[in-house]
Image 1 (cartoon, rainbow, N blue to C red):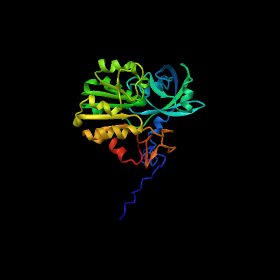
Image 2 (image 1 turned 60 degrees about the vertical axis):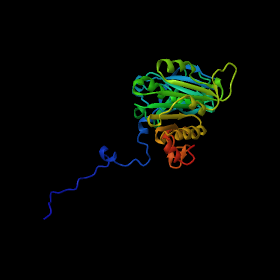
Image 3 (image 1 turned 90 degrees about the vertical axis):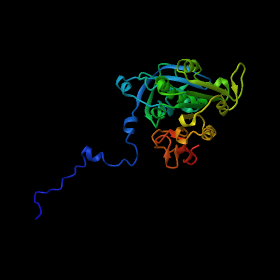
Image 4 (image 1 turned 90 degrees about the horizontal axis):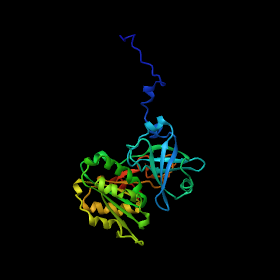
Length: 305
């Protein structure tokens, strides 16, 4: 005889524990936290070259500044009211919770307007967005950081991380190539990286200029100056996409596994949230699923580079 006291429990669709179990088909759950605007003041502007400036930002609200966190390799959306916003890699240490540093190249409508600003101007940021470099995974190994042109900007955050945890890594080398010596960025930190942080630095320029005493050639020529233990080496490559195939193929021939090479794909990113679809490669959004990918993944993404 059935139990008359048995009652099927009523499902309250307004209960938080019930609604939170619904699958997030749009993959946007994390954006509830990151898609929040933070008003910032520009505290410092340093001209690095004719085309690049380093902006130091401070989140105005004390509470928001205290909870803002990011990982090396992530980016944020920088908004200039009345002009729009642009995705910019974070170029500062993630242990510094007082300031953010952004290296910006004058290349379009928004960045040209940013170049007209003075210290004390107000802007806004959203983020951080995207994946990051696996710094903890790299611990106990050699690290090779390879930058082409402005690619040194996103490499600066992992360089800070390594410098602050130097005892956790073996040999660390930076290979940095530019078209002309005058395009070298962060030259004022070169001595600090080498003498204080014990990071080997090799630079090269495709075309010589008056007074240049460094090497001339392509960035792959710098591999002749270093020895690589492929079984205990991780590589991070940042720069123009055309450089990825050349450099990563070279590293592959040396025996470094593709899943230990990491690149940052920032091409065509616009909204930072996968809404505009400008950065879509197949079914992958470089702004949501990236911008950091291992090279094995990149090789399996049609037209990624």
